[in-house]
Image (cartoon, rainbow, N blue to C red; front, side):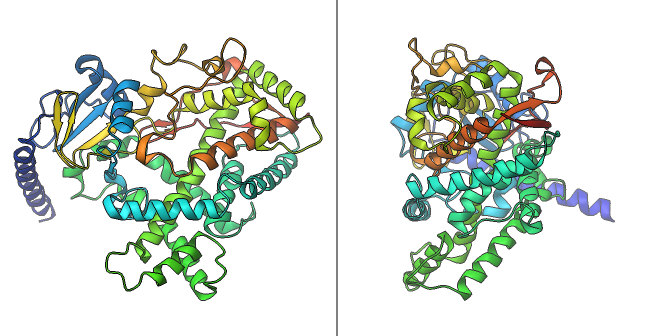
Length: 494
């Protein structure tokens, strides 16, 4: 009986998908999508997509079809943009047209097009404008947030000191430190590194980031049109994110109970005040769902992206000890050992700045970007892309573009240094994406990376548990994100 029900369900799903595919194809008749491999019914370009290796499969198709092509994930046509010129032309030159957003199927159950990261049109505009204003009001890009990062860096140094030169895994130390910076803005305070609820939250964040990028998530994101009707590992991501959402909901409830409209303490307070102001506006996007999903986006984006970059950076500096030594030489020369690094030091430290840029380029954190969509029927390089079509601006191909970087493969800080040793800007440096959907917290992230790296290297030498030549830089996963490999290190006081 159960088998018969499953077969019936599959047949219903298959017929539904065929109908959807027919409707989509019909609606796409008004467009001329870029060329690509011919899709099969239901399963799209399954023959061209190597199992569980979405990025490498798309890079392989690029070799045949060029920098702009169309691939079908099941019944979803996706326009793929590769290389600096194609991505710039879309995200910068046609910024408005390519400013739409698509939600990864693995995340759709959680976000449902709510929150600043995955919203579109008026909802996105209202939330982005508000969020930028509040983040700036709470110090993003200002001295006050710099002092908050410096304070958190001191807490991190204390935790490192307690390890007493013994090997340890840096994941949770770095996640806690970085997360506490965004927590101070979103929740109004920081958490102790031994707080059990906070540590559980950090584990959930780390697990969900990895789950979004593992083999099953890649498989599900391609064949969601079929797999969404069946149970499977894809539900684990939404279960973890739901637990994080519940934590946020509890914080919102706590804020409501103690809210003083004349003295907002954090982002949540500001959102609640705006909800009250606009309660009679039927077009307002200031509601509980958008509050929870925007807070989740800020909390998640402000934790995992920076902590993952720091983790990869530590590993690279142990793999290349000469780079670490040269950074410390510049730190000693410009800052010395007796004062706290500040953001103004960055302009006098081109080598440190170049290394941090190269860490971000090499770590290639979001290789396929967060999916975009065109907001209207859009002409692009002689093609006509219908409104709503999903777009992958492949950040990895920009960060590894041989026409823009002298040494695109491997780890080479010289990519960001000129002949005189000064920092060299590069338009292809797009770890935060580009255009209208550029990361909200870019300025905060850049400040955190500089202050955390310099503060730690000022006090400690990073020592690997194996010989540098034996350090493996291969990521755990490469999917939605590039997940750094697991490792241990020792920190040796200087």
